[in-house]
Amino acid sequence: MKVQTEQDFGTDPTKVRDTDHYTEEYVDGFVDKWDDLIDWDSRAQSEGDFFIQELKKRGAKRVLDVATGTGFHSVRLREAGFEVVSADGSAEMLAKAFENGRKRGHILRTVQVDWRWLNQDIHGRYDAIICLGNSFTHLFNECDRRKTLAEFYSALNHDGVLILDQRNYDSILDHGYDSSHTYYYCGDDVSVYPEHVDDGLARFKYAFSDGSTYYLNMFPLRKDYTRRLMQEVGFQKIETYGDFKETYRDADPDFFIHVAEKA
Ligand code: SAM
Image 1: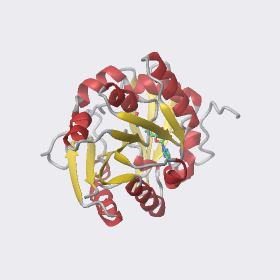
Image 2: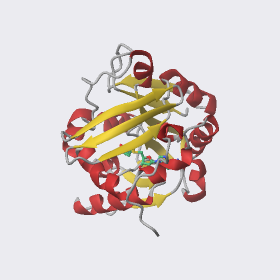
Image 3: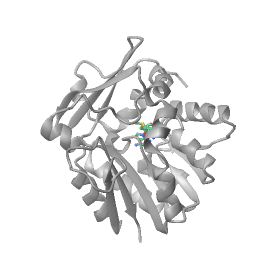
Image 4: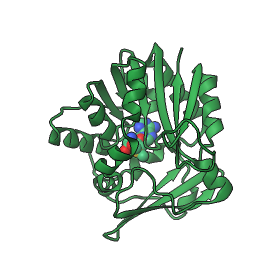
């Protein structure tokens, strides 16, 4: 397999609004930096045991991490006693996750699969699916979002739960970006900034202290739109937390976390 080391957004990066582009965005250099970006220790500190408690409350044991990335949640949940399968569409991300798992004494069970065809490669049902770290916003059209949610829905047991988070794009779209906000997974040596925002694109720039820069093109999901899609796919009860809290003013949180129950 040819390893791509540079991101390629072509001559007009703001025109790249394509669900399939994510595998080209997580190139080796960026994947290597991602752990600096998310700084595991401070991330663990800021999210506390929110996800572990939400899963335990529902008696979940088998968890599918569909956006494994470099493995942060897969490893944390294994250490908390859950049985975890770690999926992602990016081979580079999964390789890094596996390496990170080994360093911490775990052999992650990894599956490379795109969400839109999840059930081709993921067999059996799960008590919970987690899709974290603002991953769902990589999907650029509604068909892909509906297909993905339907695949998640059918990989869950009858009373399963989907936990999916997203940036607070409502606030960015309506009020602009407030740079005083420090996103919860950021390391100290990286700045994160939306270089371009319109109704169909949020293009984030990740600038590292060593001078390297990378970009991610995301779709700016509005909170209520995500909730509606989940409802329409069949999830019965959806609770949305703002930065891990039940009550919040809509403009304040950096992240929303949707906890969607199937039954
Ligand atoms: N959850 C990790 C975290 O919080 O650090 C990773 C988040 S990263 C922003 C998004 C991840 O979603 C990437 O690893 C990417 O490969 C994966 N991803 C994006 N679109 C995908 C798709 N259509 N199918 C499977 N994985 C996808």
